[in-house]
Every structure is written in structure tokens, then in C-alpha cells.
Image 1 (tube, one colour):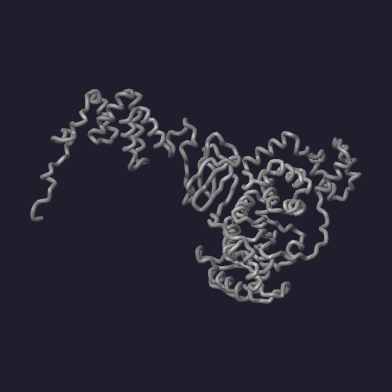
Image 2 (cartoon, rainbow, N blue to C red):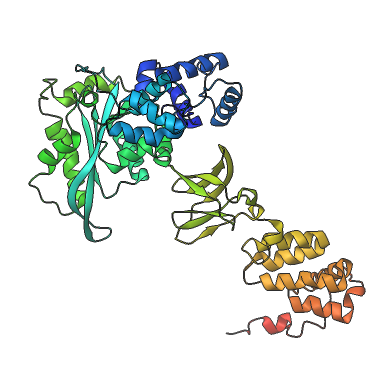
Length: 513
């Protein structure tokens, strides 16, 4: 990430760590930035008062401030070697020394200095890790997460044998664990597992260390923007910091046993289970009766005994249980809908072709553009379902699509109150079945004009005749030009048009039946 301008979310994560009291060195190491970068943003945060205010600065406000800073020249210019990045990387991998490489770059038009090349190469190439000593964490400070393949298990839902994955969260001080087997590495599964693990501990640690970068989901939450955004939202809700354990850095995880390997070799090895539910029930017992009751090789105490001391140092769980949310970047297609989980959700037509962010929970899907929420939809319940808001579609393209009842009611209101009532009642029961009738009634306006259509609808309402052919017949015969007495139908005999009416005596049940 060196040499590139940081995204709003990266800077916001840096501010969150600054507010938590992390040192510049630690932030730089865990976010893969230079300490100069951290120092620059710390200075800007102090000037803006971001570290002292009660709430973390909102993304939209932060974006505006960063844009102003770039315009004022706070962010330095990119390296002059950047256009030759691929060439430099290839030659360095071939063993070409910097002085010789400078000559090759001159032939390609590079006019910068040797110092610039040396700095660029230093950022490009990994350095040997330093030697570290074991550092024990204090109670409530840290938990380590492992996630890895655990073999084949029977899935009673799909009624087949599937690959299973084991999730393990280990508290750094006590070594007490939470373990669970699942059938996928989806982001929502990863988030749900964290929620259940923290609830099992009854509190929250200050920092979660991601141990096993070989697992696909762990790689995703470190490197992929979508998974990263979902995981960071979880971390903000519970108030813990995320610390990726980089490859070839065993000092990050040397104090904790490999959770996945321990579970596989001790809890699962040599056992057969009916299905995943039985295996998870076994795991829960194993954590309490075996893993928690053993004398740990490093601490020389039982994890559950140490956990009793650690428990009181955990931060309390939030009052509201976290609603699992998944973020996904999508493109708004020409039909004014985005695709998520095989279903379709509308967004404003002015943003067609733009990238939007979706935040999906089990119950709803929210669309965002530049941190502004554009729409909230109920989540689709089956594949291919469309969730559409009429205001998102261009007015000249509304005819014939699902929000047609909205358009028809608006056109009817422009004609008059009686027409609006007629159309509203017509569409009230089965709107999709009566769309053509409503469209036909409003088209009569072009032939007879708005005043006559309004009068015809008033007459049809008086007779409670909610049919297109009734309104058309009234207009054809000129009956709309005759006055309609409001009290004419309140009492007295039924009108002659009621051909199939029956008297009260005829409808009353016969005596003795």
C-alpha cells in the first residue's frame, strides 16, 4: 500500500486505532503503511479534532476533509519510478543491482534520481523479519482466530456429505476457546461465528488476531474490500481491533497453539459423527471438559481457571445483538437495478453505470453511493425476484413496468378527485389484474377531455360500477353531461340499471326452513 493514496475507509480505520491508543509503529505494521503516513494522518486528526470528539468521524465528512487536504498539497506526489513498477520488479527479481537498473531506466526515459529509485525499491521489496521474543498478553487484551479445513461431514439439510471447516477463537491470556464446524467460508458465516464466539465468552477482547492466512475467508477479510468492509463493521459494533497475522511472521502467533490443528488432532481425530450437529455438540463438550480442563503447556494452568480471571477484564457485550450485514460492490445496470444474491434491487436511474455499495442483512438490502444511503429494500425471498421503487425509474420509461399502479394513480389525480377515487378503487383489490382497465379509462381522456372523464367517473361511482366499459358507455351516450343527484340513490327504488337486483322479501329465508 506504500506510495498510494489511502482510501477513506483505510484512513477511518487508522483513526479508530489512534483513538484506541495504538502506537504509530503498531498501526504502520498492521495496516501495511509507513510510520510517516501514520504520523501525517495523526497530525491532520489533531488539527481537525477527530481524536477528541465523542464519535468517530463519519465517512462522508472524512472524505470531504481528505479531498481538501489533497487539493492543498498535503498528500505528496507519486514516485517518478511508479510508471516503471513492473519493469523494476522484474529486473530486481532477476538480481539486477540498483545502479545497473538506473542505467536501464534511463534508456526508457526515466529522469529521476538514484535516491528515488532506491526508496522505491525499498518499498517494493520485502525485508527480512526481525527477531522477536515471546510477549504474553494481559487479560482481555487479545483473541486469536483460526479457520481451516476439517474433513468431510454429513449435512442433514442437503442430505449429502460435504467439506467442513472449523472455526476456532482462542483467548490470548487464558487460552480458553470457542470452536464450531461449518460448511462454507462465506463472509456472513464468518461474521456469525464471531458473534457466537463472543457471546460464549460473555464479553469482548480489545483485539482479534487473524492467525491462519491460508484460509480463503481470512485472506478475504484482510485483502478484499467487500469482506473487509463487512468485518470492519462487525469490529466497530463490538469495539475490537483487527490485527492480521502476516505470512512469515510467527512472532504474531507463537504464544498460542494452532487452534485448527489442535481441534483436528485432539477433538476430531479417530471419531465418527452422525452429522455436523452431533460433531458440534461434541466440540462444545470437548472445549469445556478437555481443552479447558487440561494444564496448558505454556501457562501451566487450566484455561478455564485462567478464564475466570480474564472474564472480568472483557468489555461488556453491546446491548443490541449484532445483525449480520454483508457489503458488496455492484454496478447499476441500464434497467436501474443491481444484482445481489441472484435477485434485483432498484437504485436511482441517474446513477446508471456507476459502482454502488450494497449492505445486506437477512431482512433488508440498502444501497449506498459515496457513503450516502440511496434506498432500502426488503430482501428478496427467492431467486429472480425484483424489488423496485418507482421513483428510481426514469418517468418516460415507467409505462408497462411493475410500478405502473403508482403512475396511473398520479395521472388520475391530475384529472380530478372522482377519477382518482375510481382508479384507486379499481386497483385496490387486484392491481396487476386490473392494470389494463385502469389504463383504458385514462386513455379516454385523450378523446373526451379531462372534464368529461371526471364527470363520467363521478357517475360510475354513484352507481358503484367500477368497470372500463361502464365509463366508456357513459361517455359514448353523453350521460356524463347529465347531472347526478347525490341523494338520488340514498333511498327509494333501485335504479333501472340494476337488472339483477332482488327485493328484501325475495332474499329473506322462507319460514320453516
